[in-house]
Length: 121
Length: 121
DNA sequence: GGGCTGCACAACCAAGAGGTTGACAACCCG
DNA sequence: CGGGTTGTCAACCTCTTGGTTGTGCAGCCC
Image (cartoon, rainbow over all chains, first blue to last red; front, side, top):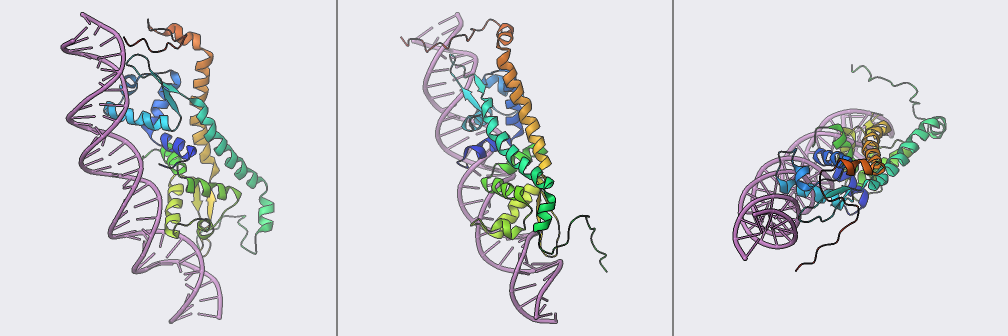
């Protein structure tokens, strides 16, 4: 749906079945039938899942006679890890420089201690 | 939708708007209005996005008078990176031990050379 | 060449996601 | 207390998603 690559990758991995397939493919290439075996769903459903993974660039499919072996393209993972690491680091950095942030705050209450809700009466 | 935590996290980050919000929150906490400002969508839509992020455990919302400051919970990222790293490493490892994998194969054609399609006649 | 296997494409359907508007609750300010 | 500000909840609409079944094509096997 979303045109950008990162969205497609995240979206593709948001499904447990597809993550499971990726896990399976990390061990080695597999055919559609092999991938479909563990699941209750129809072969067509699996084929759809593979299309999603392929559109996300997570897998590639080659031809080998009438079989279509599926191959994991692990380098796409880097796209995610880069994004994640960037903001995680940024957030951690922010914790480290908490004093600066507090100094920049107006005259708000300093959240040094988490205050509980006040008595309702 | 999917009950498991990892799916919720991936799904939450599959939306560019929500990733953008996370990027914004990495700089520092913000109110809903502040977060909504850059976007064309209604405040309610932003509120929904935040709910998705909150359900994924990516952000938390506190109370501060009538304001609801949103805070990034970066540690959830670890959940993803762990998953990703696991299978990326596994896939990379597989490349390294390609010979073993080939040896373990049955009597299939060894894909040492990518054979082109046979002559159709 | 006929049939079986492996897989994809198309049409359809139920459920969910993301957007909208409208109403309203909680809180500060005067 | 009344009014503005901040944000949520509910109802509704539409498009997408994940599933189904049906059909059909490409390629081995006999």
